[in-house]
Image 1: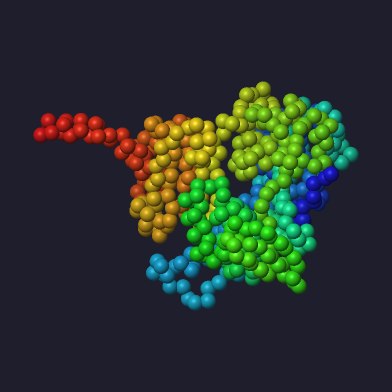
Image 2: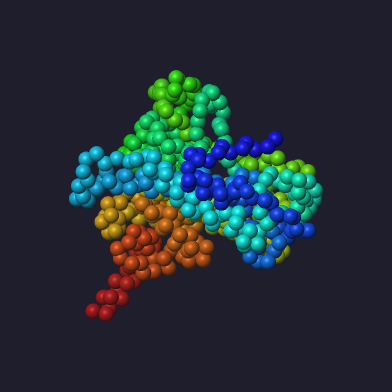
Amino acid sequence: MSAPTPPPILPWDEHNQKLVSHVHPANWRNPTPAGRYNLVVIGGGTAGLVTAVGAAGLGAKVALIEKHFLGGDCLNVGCVPSKAILRAARAMAAVREAAGFGIHVPPGASADFAQVMERMRRLRADISPHDSAQRLAGLGVDVFLGAARFTGRDAVEVGEQTLRFSKAVIATGARAAAPAIPGLDEVPYLTNETLFSLTELPRRFAILGGGPIGCEMAQSFARLGSEVFLVETHHGILPREDRDAAQIVQAALERDGVRLLCCARNLRLAKAGGHIRLRLDSHEQQHDLEVDQLLVAVGRAPNVEGLGMETVGVEFGPKGVQVNDRLQTTNPRIYACGDICSRYQFTHAADFMARIVLQNALFLGRARVSSLVIPWSTYTSPEIAHVGLHPHEAEAQGIALDTFTQPLGQVDRALIDGETEGFVRVHVRRGTDRILGATIVAAHAGELIGEITLAIKAGIGLRTVGATIHPYPTQAEAIRKTGDLHNRTRLTPWVKGLMNRWLAWQR
């Protein structure tokens, strides 16, 4: 069975034409295969691009095969378009909140959804040359557009051409999955692959899934003027995040007009004229809604179909390709990286997994994916960012923690900015200052988490973080203040008594 063909990129305006001319040019002619490649990479998303470009830069003979669009989800239907919409929605929110800063906006200010989406398409097209077939070819990568299939222990077929390799990398990523919901196959619905083709704002918009994508889009569309219903089977939103952090974001979404229907049960879907009907139970209340658009944002499915992996001894299943800690598949000549084999389905995780593959596949390296310190961020307002262990994960591993929380309401810059809802929370191994994990809730938490990620990676303790001078006033001071909180725990009654006696002796 082959993976579903993605929908066309619409509307077919000048911006999307420019995009496609770079990521899947209609006039592209596949090159004549080299005799033998050091590396054949299947998949042109972030993982595949970093692997191919990195290998070519090191002098390897490399082929990259992409079935659909170079740039993968991130460029075409993920990070880039979603963050462009988020930025426009944040601008709309700033207009509505301007009066609180003494700025009077004339009545009637509103979002022009068509222009918001055109701006997104323009920016996506402007970024696309970086992932283009032309650029890759210029960097020494043989780019083949078409479906790939393993046909032998050292061979991959693309169309009627056969590429032979010393090593190969599977980087075919994942796609949105359709959950088993009664009636879903009978109604039109959006996924991240079709959401960014909208040109008209849905008046009433239902979103299934209170994870990062669902929450980001729910808040954005509500700010842009939709009446949004966010449906989640768990209690609250963002079930994998710190519960205090998720509660802050949930309150922000609800203030922006998102109606949360959590603990959802018995969801049924049906057509209702030109609308979509949702019936469900939430907190013992029955709901019967009609909406204009439905976004399904729950679950991902690995793109494992049609690759012929079973013929070359590569084990795979519903969760993707099986790899060891060195990203080697069950066939030692073939590696995998990115969403196809990782529970961390982030662009930056794919990037660094690709770097591990380069070391191990080309240079007999022993780099391990378990050594990566991978932060992540959900780009709601405020953002949630996390790195390392959560307390329940530490408990499962038998690790005792000390936790230090600095509320943003006690940070001068956050007060000045009017962004006091949030905190920096750092977990250290009990009795030490070794940082094992952290969660930040702040307007730009994704920018702040890098400092703590660096500290974990470099083995820098929380005392050193607390002793590091930060510019004043910045919200990053909240990170330094967690170091102050830790230092105060060292002032035990015995130490305080000793200091008092010393100072008394000096008088």
